[in-house]
Length: 402
Image (cartoon, rainbow, N blue to C red):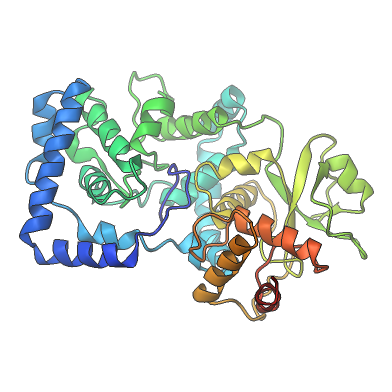
């Protein structure tokens, strides 16, 4: 799974660029190799100007070549491609709940201390740990330096990965990790909870007092660092991420935000029968339209999305965390039997919204928050139920709009 810390929707490379990169790298053509060598020379110069020692650079770049598999993986992200119910089914599987529950009990004292210090809900911390690496079981086998150098070389996401490469070199140079130990995801995320190198530098902490920040093998460090990251990105202690709700008959779907007290007055109830919180604000979220499960989500849900901007990912983290604390399954029925839009149709939805003046970002077929909000506005203005869910009916309505 592509992780987090890229705070992202990652934009795909143009097909023609991807085709030539893959073919050039795969066939070992002279020009890509020569260009990569020149690129590494530029990186050396820049890193030296930042104070990185020559010996560090020699060790980092010795025999380094671009990784064509990494280039190919820029086109794949399951959290944006799978239907959300399929994604959640695999992400919050019984085996992951069972193992996570046991680990939560085993680390009870440690996570209680982390929760007290940072104010971040233990369920969310463990949800991220479970989602990112299955609680440390799958931390990634890619050479982080090679992955970052490849992505920086092809200028994927502009200067983002070039800066991450510089951060990774700094980590090695400072002696916080050995060159050979920097293994991780194809996008360069590392450790038990998959930090990008820049986030390691800013948010990693020593969770057990041994004088080191070790997110690779030290669980206390990884959990505390994750809590520090979330708190640093605005986590509000005492505020839940959200909850599944049941809507009353005749509910006015034009309502979008409000305090929990206001939602209660509108007739919303928690799906699990518990009372809504006494304080705080939340917005209505339809991950699969009004016929599927409906949620109230808060600002803390948005903080989870700073780890990964996919709603499927954020909802999986939040729901997994609730399950680990004894919560029940999602009660609403997913619209899995209803016709779903193909990739090309989702791209068309975004392009047609953009032609009407909505900012939906790059039309890539990945339905994120900007596309949902644009579609809700379109639906409301044209008399449709405003749930932000792209259906064949909505595509036809967009095609008929001028």
